[in-house]
Image 1 (cartoon, rainbow, N blue to C red):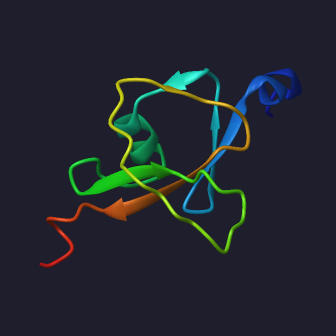
Image 2 (cartoon, rainbow, N blue to C red):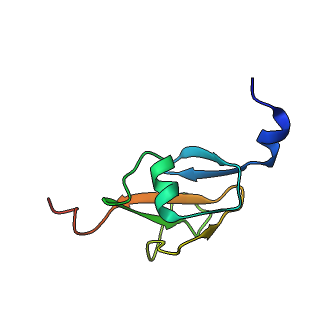
Length: 86
């Protein structure tokens, strides 16, 4: 059984529409990718800046050591450009 008070304190984020619940306020890009089932060696992660789902424009991959997480943030995992042409 999940304790409700722990769930309420978690930060819920989305990676390619997969829900990830974190019990902390910061995470690395690599950790977030791994939690979503993607290898950080093959994928980059991008923060979706625009709330309009039709326009999932992301400029640069996140490479910071720590990402400050807020509930509702949406991310996209995409193949790194050097893997896209294999």
